[in-house]
Length: 551
Ligand SMILES: Nc1ncnc2c1ncn2[C@@H]1O[C@H](COP(=O)(O)OP(=O)(O)OP(=O)(O)O)[C@@H](O)[C@H]1O
Image 1 (spheres, rainbow, N blue to C red):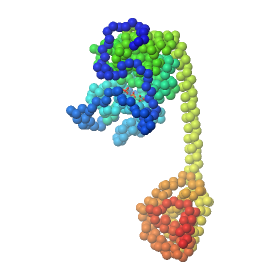
Image 2: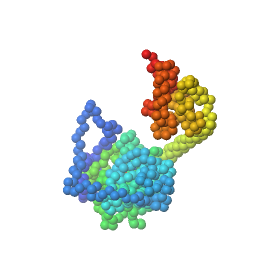
Image 3: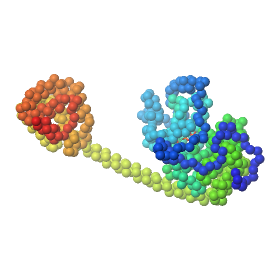
């Protein structure tokens, strides 16, 4: 780097993992995720530059796929979190004897909201309390006990944390069919995606807000003896109000009481993302100071709107205490000072979360941030509350409407409204002559089983499609179905084709007799023909019949 560096240089360069040698070597301006990038490019768009990232490894030819080695044996549902073990869902919600999974029985899946290297995250509604949550499901089935133990550790780590306004809320965790499920509080997105998709929300002003939130979260974690060890924008989530929540506790460690750090020999620890990794982690020193360093790199990235390197010279320089002055010179003195405190290569000289929170520059911004969050969240809950009230009011009105409707329907079953009688009368007038087959044959006067239902059905069939207001609770489709099934399956007289045939034939005899009998026979034919029976407007029936009768 050409710019002068502000802190002293530590002479010995840090060893770099070899697989980072091909990775991005220097600071660069952040590449934005274009909203249209996912869609297929049009023929007019310029050719895409060649990708310089490493191609994926070819599949191993030496051994069969893991799915063939480890047969998919569905394992029963196992609650992993204390919350589920102590208060499992009631039998009415989750019944293990049903074929559906616990997830399917207890949640309504609203869709996929994100995908990480470990799992897929779904937005869900819990059928237990009606609230929305995020459920992360591991993509791969566990390939062994070590992998399983690691995955489960994330859930247990998360549950072990005390709730905090800036820490993602844990709800439950369970295992089913070789997959781990973690149910957490639902957020809007991750800070990484948010910063990429809304570039105007990056820069120093936003970075101060993010810093205040995350320092509070780290102070909470560290004061309870935990170190996160994977702080990065992808593991920080944002709620609707803009509040940040620290999540993804897969690498979290519990430190021995009174200690701020442990050595590698004391535990089998994994490394986090190299871009945000503190230098002491490569020396095997794991502790709370590593979180401060990673937060410092994240804030540098967000405040300067840059991508930090995964390796190379600039990566080394940053871990020696040299800030990229070509980017940081544009920041305020306060922010530069903060970054120097957080990115100090020596852990004992690096500021703690508590010390940083007590700085006047942070104190005043934290106070402002809390006030603005309080106002936004109050507005949001007021909005939510009024929405719920409106929904409840609407439901109440609907249920009243239903009640009145059913009362009306009950009374109408006993004595059909006059309008119906009139229409029935109109229909019967069509068949008023002696040839009329319907009244005696289809509606047996003393057959209570057929008459009302069928009258109703015919009447509905005729009124469907008319401009008249349908009767409340009229089930148009069901009418057709019920008619169809009556014709087809019921042993009663009206459904037997042999019974209808004579009538049909007799009416057919009279087709040439008069237009009226022609119309009547046409309707009877329509009624007797099960497959062609479609609800029709009475007027249109007549229109069609008249048309047919014309030579
Ligand atoms: N609680 C949540 N609320 C809203 N979105 C979430 C939540 N948890 C995860 N997501 C979304 O899902 C994506 C993947 O989640 P997450 O990073 O936790 O998965 P992962 O497999 O652990 O990823 P990795 O191991 O690569 O960090 C996130 O980038 C985010 O967009």
